Image (cartoon, rainbow, N blue to C red; front, side, top):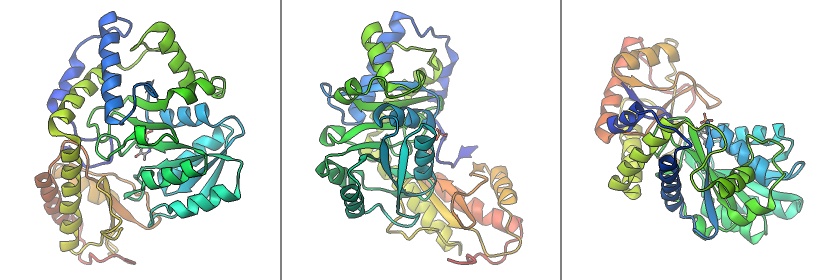
Amino acid sequence: MLLLIPGPVTTRPEVRQALTRDIAPWDNDFRVFMARLLMRIQRLAGGSDSEHVTLPLQGCGHFVTEAALRTFVPPGGRILVPATGAYGNRMIRLAREAGRIAVPLPVGLTARTDPAAVARALAEDPSLSHVGLVYSETGSGIVHDVRAVGATVRAAGRRMIIDAVSAFGALPLDLSAMPEVDAAVFTANKCLEALPGIGFAVARIDRLLESGGNAGSWSFDLADIYTSALNSGPGSFRFTPPVQIIAALDVALDVLAAEGQGARLARYAENMRTLYDGVAELGLTPWLPASLQGPVIVNVHAPGDPAWNLHAFVDSLKSRGFLISNFHSTPTPTFRVGCIGAITPADMAGAVRAIDAALREIGITHREAIQA
Ligand SMILES: *Cc1c(COP(=O)(O)O)cnc(C)c1O
């Protein structure tokens, strides 16, 4: 079964194989291993050893995003969040529930964040200390220009937090050239092609040192994770980590190093194109124009046929070896297909054939969207 979802993704057998050992997190060998793994991740983020540190946090992407918001935006502080879609909205909710004031910047699901609009919003409201941007908006499939928005944030003298969860490992990130970024956050189970259970923040050391006491949560305090690692030594954890998941991530990083990050992005882009062009040839309508379509996830308009039933479609695809999401994150009915993970353009071509067969099986005769 191939998972064609934007995380957790299809993984390689050698990655899953790493789960078969018992490991003690406090063991000195494990700490050395962990410290090395953190440095490998920091290299991928373009972090500078003197200015950045890579901090692990057990759990999912929401956890490490919340930790970054709590740590760097002070209680009651204000953060501008481009409302890019489902994950932009999640950042807004995480900030609000943590007692920060999230100010949405209207963007919509079918546009890239306009750096000039960010500049205007920051100029109009000097009390906004931060901008929180989703790099790859998994709700829409659009990749936002973190470099261009970052330059605007830098020029305005403000700070930035990047949700790079569905981007990191494939889309480029060079934090040493983005001093405005307090932290970029991501998890192991998306473009890194490892398993779910651990997240990371690549964060600025100077900002961590200024931010102690902000978090209002011991569990979700990146500054505390940092000082604790200073006291207990590199590679140490405060609380029990998912050790096997971390061991599997190290194997996944070997796989990524062998493939090369540029080649991985090119493979995902080819996966996306195979799927995007393939469904169009089947008479379906991709949700985004090709010019806005990113390499991570493709949304496709549901066929305008009364026989359409997403769950029946998903079940039929599953019986053919492809698992897609059984929900949609667009305002109008769609189905969504992830293009990331240990999958190839040939797999995507197989998925297109399976989509054709599944549409026939559930009795779809009219494939055009109700409203394209
Ligand atoms: C997957 C994802 C997250 C985090 O999801 P979790 O289920 O908490 O791991 C956050 N942001 C984006 C853009 C994502 O794609």
